[in-house]
Amino acid sequence: MKLVVGLGNPGSQYSGTRHNVGFDVITELAQRWQAGKPQLKFQAEIREAIFPSGKVFLVAPMTYMNRSGESVQQIARFYQVASEDVAVVCDDINLPLGRLRWRAGGSSGGQKGLADILQRLGTEKVPRLRLGVGRPPGGMDSAAWVLARFRAEDRSEAEMMVKLAADSMECWIAEGLAVAMNRFNRSSED
Image (tube, rainbow, N blue to C red; front, side):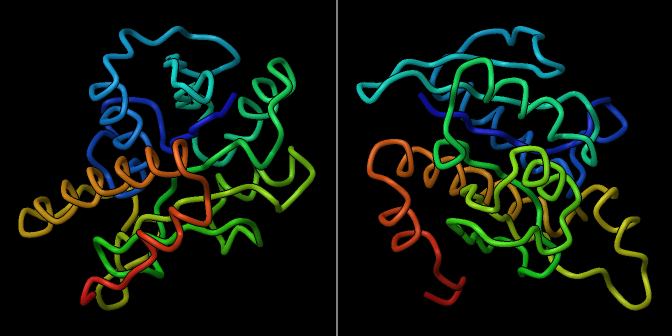
């Protein structure tokens, strides 16, 4: 059993923002897999899909970004999912728009939703897929940047990134982390 956790903030005012790209990947996967309507359990919207390798739960915590770990901890405990089988999808301002980066573990890199998950699961050994949303322009505040919607000229690139992230998540499920890292951790110039 695996959990795919997309990070974001609930509510229509956050839809389409850089901070919600994790939710966008969950939506893309749910559509691809025809996962149906989500159930609200464990402070999250959860959809279930069946693969040859087992069940996969698509999880969108409804606790707001900085408290995402509350939901993930409850789900992982209830279903007895090992931290290595929890993949977190989140935004990253330190990556250029459109760039993906898988990691097997490590620190949160300042991403507060990921930090809360790592703290509540008690380990940094949680696979994560970071989606590049770019750095804020000029002196713009980072929080304001990630809570803003993509600019018109960036929307196409953001949509392609979400589809590529969904492809990479399917690769992680079917072929494992090493293959996903080798295939998708490339610069946009590759």
